[in-house]
Image (cartoon, rainbow, N blue to C red; front, top):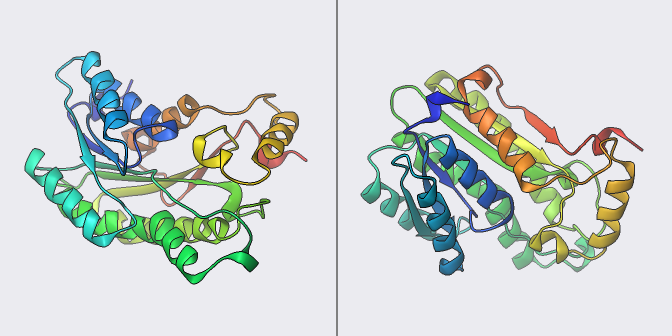
Length: 254
């Protein structure tokens, strides 16, 4: 569908499951070589690599361990990427880690870990990746949720971290546009994921979202992957610093 993506090298953080896995597979179907980033489960990452390799068409996939919330780990991640590829055109900032609960119960450590993984990581990803984006062409897409704009039960410090991620996305968009690097984000609606299931009240949140969504269903990973792929294409080259809502209309309904 997007022939300009063929042969591009793409890093997808948190690519072992959920949105990340679907994004990695979709980009591979478009002809991208994919760096499958994982933090813990190497076996899950290798499963995604195997799925990508089945696609064929000369597409390459490698699994690379790295905790995006750690500057030291991120530096090592890019050392591995540089050993495998001479350039990098696409970065999908999907990985995030947060400590759910309430702000009143949040510790400084919880705040720092959540902010580092969910927001600061985007800045460091860009600092490492942009020098590898050659030929005045690059794409950075961040993945967030409505918790940065609305108060969701149980989100606690995750909400402020998502808001910071959105702001960093917009600032990077302005800074990098003159260099041909297009930066945008996807605002993903409620969807059953392992991460969301850890948040108190998640089941009720999903039930309410499904009831009020005009499309009458929750989103899935493929819905997000399709939008991310569009933002990576040349058709989206004049979309700059924006967040596309993928929520079945949930955000506009009561």
